Length: 622
Ligand SMILES: Nc1ncnc2c1ncn2[C@@H]1O[C@H](COP(=O)(O)OP(=O)(O)OP(=O)(O)O)[C@@H](O)[C@H]1O
Image (cartoon, rainbow, N blue to C red; front, side):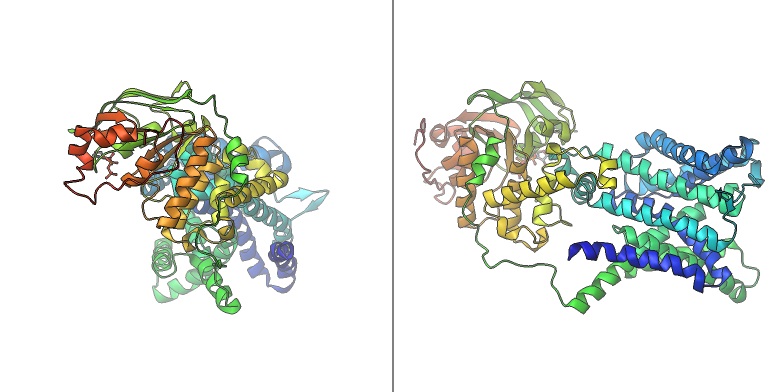
């Protein structure tokens, strides 16, 4: 029963939180209060790191902004805790919004360093300003008081915090299973594929960055009320490292890991506080930080997935289950009737209308000219093949058309709108999507999960509805639609399998099914036949004919010349970045320039060109 399985951890958590202050010593409950406060900040960071794949060493900066804003509003302006709280959280989020736009252009280590700098800036600012109390900070922050009751003791404060923690975890957990969470997971696996399916990766990252800051700000508010004082320490590096350690120890990509990580780090902290002075007399806080650093490195080396990794290994061992349910039939199932319904969703203009117009496309990499003044047209309801020897510029053309890179010169018009230099999600929103020469599946997801990402543009639920669970009906619909796509493309038997359990050829088919799930009006396929068995090739060929039949425009890059000759209505040939020929398959087969550059003659090498007649179509010259 999945419902009970979902609820059980929360039930255990609630029981644990209620009982803990009753059975633990005051000192332990005091540590427990810090665990809960830090859990809230760590949950935010785990969303940022695990879900959005962004490493931040500045979570303490937002924590401090929340704490200071709360302290200032309560002590200097006489606001009540409840009134000040949303403003303090909003202040942390506002800072994240302001710095997030420039910071999130950076990736990986650079982002980590930049956020580290942010922590230092906030520390310096609050230390230098009189308004924030200088080095000594702001004192006299009262303990929370509601309905005449002051939450003074560790146990009372613990119980006050407990629902906040449960809610923080539940909302974050819900987010990871929402449309936005799915899109972020996809971005983590393959940013370029997610973008080409319509996911605005920068926008999403910024939203999660701001949300994570909100979590940190909320934690800061409780920290201020519990300690009764906020000092520049709240923004400093060791605290950010602690948050990072909590998330990494608990396990990236799991919200629950933030709680277990916080428990471990606080216990470790307390342990080191007593142990280190005994081992090294006169040792200061730096030694403790060093200890944290050592633990962090050890965890990353020994258990990169943190406690969550150990836990799932334990569960797998206990249950003896395999992650992959497997399927009896490995060959592709027949294409379903549903395929036509799916294709009918594509918003295609009248057959023969221009869908893609490329003019004077040029791309230079320093001295290398990858494309030179290339013109290309693809109309509704036709398959155009782009062929040429290795290095001819085919993938470069795909990348420019889909917004993965900008051209040096020239224009790309999709459905009447110029898109050169625009981002891939903008191009996808116009109905153009693609597959990739090097597979770009979302490796951490199932086959169905992969296809569901492609329905991103056909669903709406944002971050907040996703967190609040207001997206249930839409999520059910998206799931049904993804299943229909899988049935339509003969992949239904694999729906629940992890995508990585599928063979290379099957993953390629999922990539095509995923692209079709967007219901595109222009489909760009980069070597879709590579690695497929002959049965799979025939299956894909039939699918593409039906795609064309539905009026969708297809641009196909393919080295399997036989498949190209059988499928394409027109062929454009590139050589060394230059368009050397264009025509029907029959014309291209006879073209001397193409024979010299790419095809070779039958006498030269019989193995190079194997044409295979496809079903006769109107206008076929074969
Ligand atoms: N990032 C880059 N920096 C420099 N040169 C590049 C870059 N990407 C591609 N090129 C060069 O541009 C030219 C076209 O490459 P491209 O990958 O588009 O060719 P292709 O026709 O897709 O080849 P293949 O059939 O092998 O995939 C090649 O000479 C390649 O070396």
